[in-house]
Length: 270
Image (cartoon, rainbow, N blue to C red; front, side, top):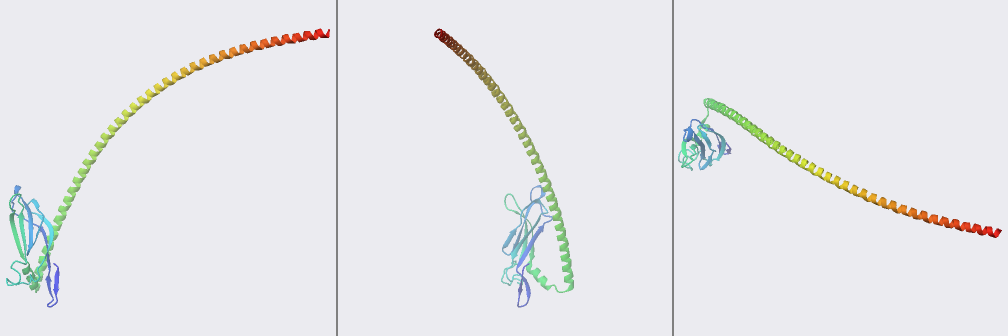
């Protein structure tokens, strides 16, 4: 509780009250299968707070907290003669069953008069009351520890179950992903193999056609070169024959001229 310290008589007066709703036990079954869908309404004065709905149970656990602001002086009001109407300082907890159709069903209610609790706290003077308060606090602490232990165990069980389910889901996803990847790889390998075979066939066909074309070109080139060589040889032979005839004619003419010159020289010398 938050508090306000009043200077005139040094009294400790709370300004807020914080409520923690832990759990419910032994509730009536108003739903299907012998259970209820339970929620709690916490009210102080005109302020209200509703917990979440815990489905299919008769022993719900919430562990939800809420805080309410107290009206000034409402805890010090005695009887019905104060400034606030009766019940303004009551903490009311109403347990309800959430109905799928129609109005929600009332399961139970607890009313805690905060003004009485506050007045009783002020009136606790002697050691016996202190011992009783210590026993109550100890009992509350033990129960709180038991509740926290139960909550921790249940939380651990829930977390373990979630982890196991997550692991199973991840394993299933990995297996499916591996199967899909394997199928894709097999199909890709088949496609690549088919493409390679077709490419090899195309390249082989192109090479064969290229070899045939080159063979035909070489054959035609050889025939052309042979024809050119034969024609060149005939031309050279003809030229050689003509050159030989010309040279022979020139030599005969030169020989006749030289003979004639020699004969003339002999006649002149005689």
